[in-house]
Image (cartoon, rainbow, N blue to C red; front, side, top):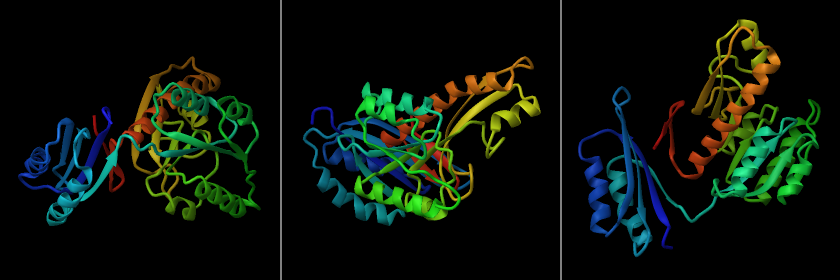
Amino acid sequence: MNNASAILLIDCPDRKGLVATVANMLYEMGANILHADQHQDRQAGLFFMRVEWALDGFDFAAFRAAFAPVAAGLSMRWRLELSTERPRVALFVSHYLHCLADLLHRHQSGELQCSIPLIVSNHADAEPLAQFYGIPFQQIPVTKENKAAAEQAQMELLSQHEIDVIVLARYMQILSPDFVKRYPNRIINVHHSFLPAFVGAKPYHAAHERGVKLIGATSHFVTEVLDDGPIIEQDVMRISHRSGIEDLIDKGRDLERVVLSRAVRWFLEHRILCYGNKTVIFD
């Protein structure tokens, strides 16, 4: 437990004294605060906070019980997380394997603090990679005719493996509203453009046709509206008139790897708060 920590995430209507209230409660219960960050959205009148403290000698259950009535009185939405609890992640992928390979390598090297008990694909391409990393692989073909049945099979697998979060590592299928509703703000996607530009299929082709000078990639939570969920991370790369479509695709893959891995890491470290269709990403 020496390196174990607790994380408290809060969002609520803004008012004076919120930071002091939380800090004083932790101080009175003997907490050693390791990191604290907060943000105010003045337009929305909202306050956001993330505070992390060492668990060594700290009564976690007593704090939860004491904090609950205080939070209710301040109209707080809040949750407590433990760094020792590793979320269970399912990776979904289609033909393109660069994001999957990157996530599996980062996981093996210890960069992503989670367990990955399942890889799901509508094609067979990823099976050798899954076998290399010793992770169970399940191929579930998806067509227009069997889409509902395929999603039902996927959801049964997710339930069997007690999955906490789904990462779409270039999974080229649109999830149904019913599927998305089962995992609110727990499905992370990477889109190969700088959203909101060039949504949908073939964004690199659309970017090339438009003659853009920057290309980008975006990681976001999945909602019922295609490519419109709360944005977690984005990055861009400069290109020129000399760049063909294949150049854009090759360069874009590096961006896709980076933005997706950052988004997944921040989720696992409990650094993300969603409100409306936006996110707060704590340092």
